[in-house]
Each structure stands twice: as C-alpha cells, then as structure tokens.
Length: 156
Image (cartoon, rainbow, N blue to C red; front, top):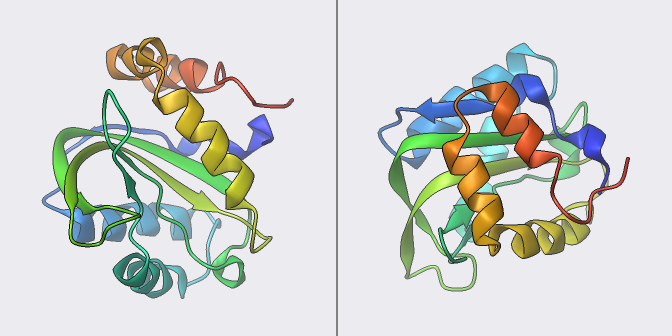
C-alpha cells in the first residue's frame, strides 16, 4: 500500500457523531467537497455497508473499514477518523454482531480489488497495541498522521 493514499486533510480527531449514518453523512460531505468522490458515493457506501458490513473485532479495539465500488471514487484516498465516543458497527464476518468502534478508515480506490492488500496491512497494524496507543494518544491531526505513516507494510 502506498503512503500517499493516507490524506492528512482527511484526518478527523474526536468527532462527535450520533451513529454510523451521521458519520457517513459528515465524512462523505467532506470527501465530496474536497473532490475525492462522486455525488453517488454516499448512497453507494451506505448500500454496500448494509450488505457487507465492515467492522473488524480486532484487539485491542474494533475498527471499521467502510468502502464502496471504484466507480464512485474520483481520487484514491484513505480517510482516518478517531471518534470521541464509540458507535455500534456491524461485523464484517457476522452481520448479526455489532462492535463499538472509535477508529474508522474509509477507503476509496480506483481499482475494484484495491482494498484487499490494504486490509491485510491494516489488520496487522491494528492488532499491535503500541500502534493503537499512538493513534489513541495523538493530540493533533499532525501527530495522528505521523503515527499512521509508521504503519508496517507501507511503501513510499
């Protein structure tokens, strides 16, 4: 995965959102206003999440990795958000299970299978307690971004 997919301008720290829908509405508006996604992205990501939920019950914290089909993406990106308080998110492997999620990585790719390699890299890093602690303890977007780019498996 290329480091340049991580977008400093798409880092959101300590967002207060009511639920998953509120998160999607706010983040997609930011993505649309910045030229990363088509107008169709919001409906597409909600529809995909309904059928294929994206919470991963990683330890020490569950994460969510929502994404849509490539046709809705203008410029590839990874948008990372740390919520102020967790929201419930349906599990990827079991739609009947929900997990409290504070860390959300919204993915936008121009290739349909672009997320596969990234999921492996993210899973490896999100199970590293020291990496998650760096994300949790970051006080500014710059500190958070600096922690993100230390992920193992990233290429320049």
